[in-house]
Image (cartoon, rainbow, N blue to C red; front, side, top):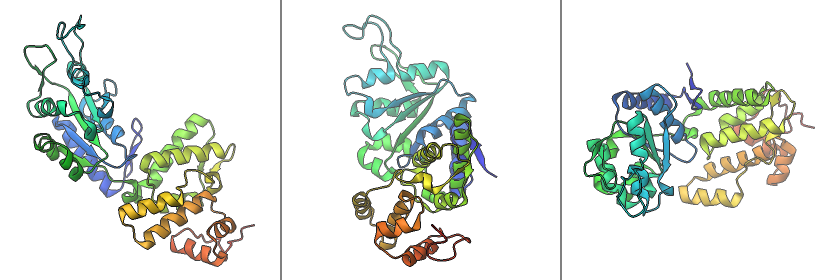
Length: 328
């Protein structure tokens, strides 16, 4: 059974994703802090919102701060606030993000943890372990009654290299890694249909996925994860204008990765030749809208070779009667 959350755009059908959901629910119901890690586009902010929904049973009150936007000088007061007279020009109390979420009983989401200024390391450990914080200029600390979610695109091992042991070990027991879309193959079509339903609502035209489009989505690796899938479908929806089906032809020129970038990724991630071949072929397949003659021309190979690659990657259909599949 597919579980889709309209307010977040998350779908949990694949076993890996369902385990993520179970841990997320347990942490939220128990009131534990949460550390999310995952590649760009894996849905860290949406998952933080889901934690907020599970914990407080409402959508409002969610506060998002990016550590990358906190300057070293103002980071403490942005997070914890200050009291009147704390410094020259402090003419009145100013609540920080922790103040606001604590008073309202809601969730503070701090993203880009790897960019957190070092001045916040110790007070953040205090917030996590003792549930207390101290606004600048206040003589006493305050109890923190809100929820806390932190996230980073780095792996847990990567964070261990950057964070002080006190902060890392305060968080690592509450860690949930968000799997990339390529590791959740059973979620791709349910997610695509979910996003398409939203596009139908916004665009006013009811559309569905062409079978070839559905096959392509299941075969594609989605380096941009959920964000890329959503954007790819939206672009195809717009390109298709009044048509009732989203076809591969509507993807022509959308989001293809330059060969040089693919080679760079292949070297950095130590892809096998087979992985590089598949990724490059799928990029060209998407760029050319599935048109086999154009794919052959673009790759400088024969139509028969294109057909063999289609078979290899599960992109050939029963209607295909040969290398060109009846293509005109």
